[in-house]
Length: 110
Ligand SMILES: N=c1c2ncn([C@@H]3O[C@H](COP(=O)(O)OP(=O)(O)OP(=O)(O)O)[C@@H](O)[C@H]3O)c2ncn1[C@@H]1O[C@H](COP(=O)(O)O)[C@@H](O)[C@H]1O
Image 1 (cartoon, protein in one colour):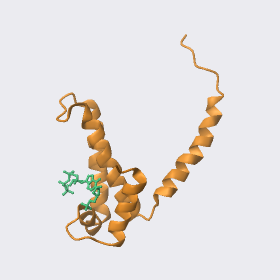
Image 2 (spheres, helix red, strand yellow):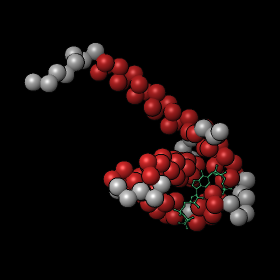
Image 3 (cartoon, protein in one colour):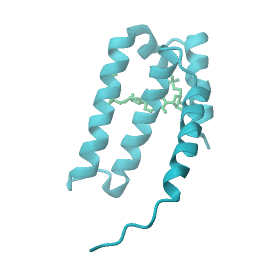
């Protein structure tokens, strides 16, 4: 069982303690352009998985591609010096903002 905290920590550990032959090390060695290319590819694959009826992994296709995207995002954050805590804090700030809308009257169909 691996949650996003653990995944990010593992990626960061690979950055700080390079392990030869590891895919994460391969990405860090190739650098930012390669990492950005992978994030773009994986984001596109998430879109295609949602749209394409011919899914090799059936309904799990979106799950599989989403996991790929989250992993590559972790690599990008680590590469750019962004911590997972920063992402979580940003999300937490929005929780406060969203609560303003909770008081909005319910939208009813005309
Ligand atoms: N979560 C992931 C993860 N998700 C996706 N991937 C890799 O991302 C790649 C995406 O597949 P693609 O076909 O798009 O890419 P590719 O053709 O293999 O490689 P490119 O030349 O296109 O970069 C695959 O090689 C996957 O193995 C991941 N690699 C590693 N992890 C995690 O990182 C940990 C450490 O991995 P290593 O760094 O390899 O030891 C693993 O135990 C996992 O927990």
